[in-house]
Structures are given as structure tokens and as C-alpha cells.
Length: 290
Image (cartoon, rainbow, N blue to C red; front, side, top):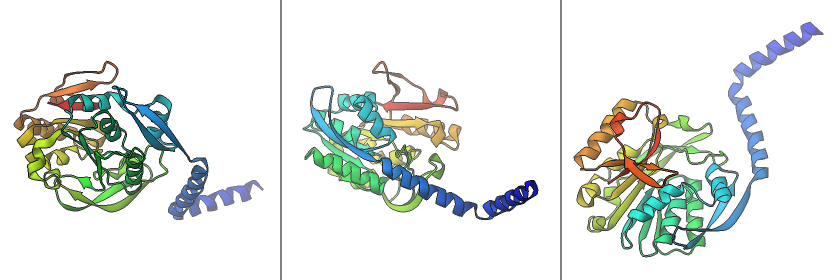
């Protein structure tokens, strides 16, 4: 009996090695079916710092969705800064808007402003549109494509809709998430999306694109040179393959456009001067450029 078990184990191990992809695919299907059995949606009302309200339809489970549901917000310190620096009649450009918390927060708090939200993920983009629609906002426009420093198509490493953290999709790297579908999406330069006579209306730009931030900035350099909008972007070591090169390129870009950089402190709700070139090799920080 012991010999038979060992022989079976050897056989099964060899079969697994040969058919590993099929085994993992089957495992994924089983777990996806179990996952779908737990999905539910919530619809709740939330409030901005000035007391204006907005609604969001959230698909659970999900990291962003559960956080909003449990705490009433997502990266509230960022949303507050976006609204603080946005004058009433200016545009807020939300690049990598996900399901729209920041876009909708800013639109609710600044109803005279215009919000342009970019989200290339085909499923998350639909949830973004749904959240805009349930608020009946007339000052939010959704653009279903990526931004960068080119016009055309680009490979997009798209999170599976069933991932817990569905905010890790990227045009840069497929290793940010375990369940990735490679799709082609449209990509444009912000300088070419916004009419040149509207450059003057842009007040604040937020970038959250999992490693593509510098290309987004380069594709918006015409706007940046013309009107010097406030820029807020995520700066994370895990999205940078060559950290030292990335730091030098960011510093050079911001320096030639006469920006000072600051770190947004989450808990103190303040900003402090921050030198990108001096950061180490392990970092996750929100940078505000003024």
C-alpha cells in the first residue's frame, strides 16, 4: 500500500508539472465561482468637508470599496487637498480615477468646477460612470482611455474584476497583481485631449497610474508650461524598475517646469517640503507639486 501511494504521488507530481497551467486555470475558475457567490453591492451617502453630499454604489468585496464602506472615505487627505487647491471655476483632471471617489468628492464639494476623469479599465470604468450617473452630476466627464506620452494603442495589464484590490492595473508592469488580463486600450496625450484654448481652465491634476506617472506628465507638458496647475501624484518604489533613474527623471522634469515638491501627510492633513532625489529605495508617498 505504501509503495502504491508513493507511485501515485510520483505520477501526480509529474502530471501536475506537465499540466500546471491547466490545474491553476481550473483552480482559478473554482475560486472565481466561490468569489462571485459572496459579491454584494452597497449604495450609501457620503459627505465632503463642506457638508455637501454624494452617493456611491460599491461592489464588494474590494479594497477601495470596503474602505469607503467602513470608514466613509478613500484617501480623504488627498481628496481634501484636491478640493483645497481647486478654485471654483477651474478643471480637475483625475488620471486613473478608478471607481471615482476623488472625482465625485471634488465635483460635490466644488459644483461650479469641471471634473474630467480618465479610467481605461473596461469594467472599473463602467462603475465610475455608474457612480457619476447616480449623483446626476453635470460637471463630471468620463474618458474611457489611458493617458501617457503617445497617441494610439498600448498594452494594458488589467486587473481581474474579482481581485480584492482592483486598483493595480497598469500600462507598465503585469506583476502588480496576480490575476491580469493583457488587453489593448486607447492612449492619448493630455495636451491633445484638452483643447489648447482650455488650458487656462485647468487648476489641479491628479495622477494615479501605477508607474506611468512620468509619461503622463510628459504628455501634459504643454499644459504644465502654460498654466502651472497643482499636480498630485503617487510615487511608489514598487512601480519603479530603476529607482535611481526614475528619481532623476522626475526631479529633472519638475525642475525645468519650476515646481516645488511637497509630501502630503495623511494623518496631520498638512504638507511639508520633500526632496524626491533624497528618498531611499523603499517608499510610498503622495507628492504635491506647486
